[in-house]
Image (cartoon, rainbow, N blue to C red; front, side, top):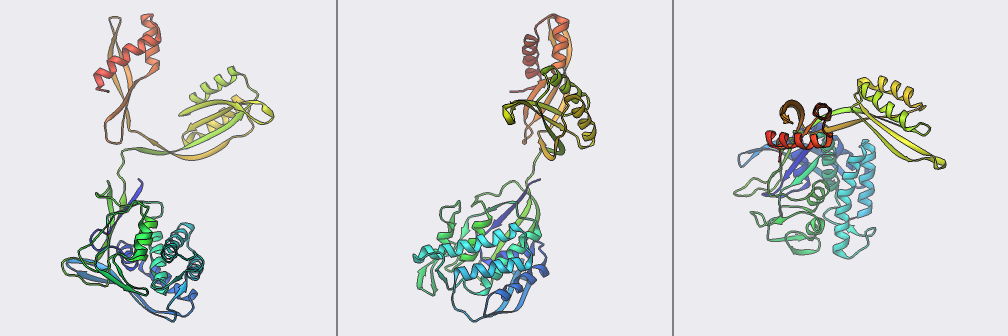
Length: 413
């Protein structure tokens, strides 16, 4: 089943340390995330991390995990490009896979791009202030590592509405209204809804917003259909009256009634066979157990006419299918892929029908959609042919008569 996750930030917003803590609380390897965070200091001159710990706390009745990061940083500002280089070198030193690297890079890039737009500066020249310390890298690298450990890259990630708080903020450029301009820039133009939270303080930080925008498809008002598997609560350092300062991460899978299996897809080009040979080949492949055989006419090199033969079969029948294909078509080679096949649930039932005063039992394939509703009811054509021969009627007319009775008896609409 497809993986799904929800980042619930509708009460207390989201910050980088809170997201990292929630992912660890949900089961990401604590030691692995700690080691990744420590690595950040090696590539940011003047920074030194002395302690990284994820501690269990209880806040407003919720058990949660909280990141404690102790560090010193000799720089009060750094260019965004310097931070990006340090991030890239940290990712490389940790041997992160490409998806984790992309998440980390895109998150920090969104932060730098927002600052450049706010200050009207070129991306390559903009300086970061609040986001220039090693803790910014620690949050992003920690989350990138935790997401990988939980196997959430490739999952469909949703966010609730984003609580941003209220009041005013004081930072390097003075006093500004909350939410910070960087948070707005990062989330604008995307499918996120922000709302004032239950406190007149900053609830969502630019780093938290950047990672949320990189991960999630946007805000939802209701949870999607999900089979819950892992839940994590990440606590921030601020304490508020009346609500827990936590972000919740829920990971699971999307329920589905679709059936799935793995089959072989075999393809070859045949450019020197007659239609009769191709027709016989289709029959022999079907007898050998092929689930489906498709023949597509086309043009190949030197403008020669060709047939593209595509066969779907069970893995266990691959050798038999290849032997039949080579023998009947004369082709010298074939391409084979293993592919996943998704199918609507189906069943074969027997339905009695009346044609020309006689009753016949017809095999009908019933398919249902993902919600369990009937999608189709198709009579087997071999039964149609038998009835047509016995009643001395055109098969097309028999198909119409049988189809109408089957639809009535099965309730197909």
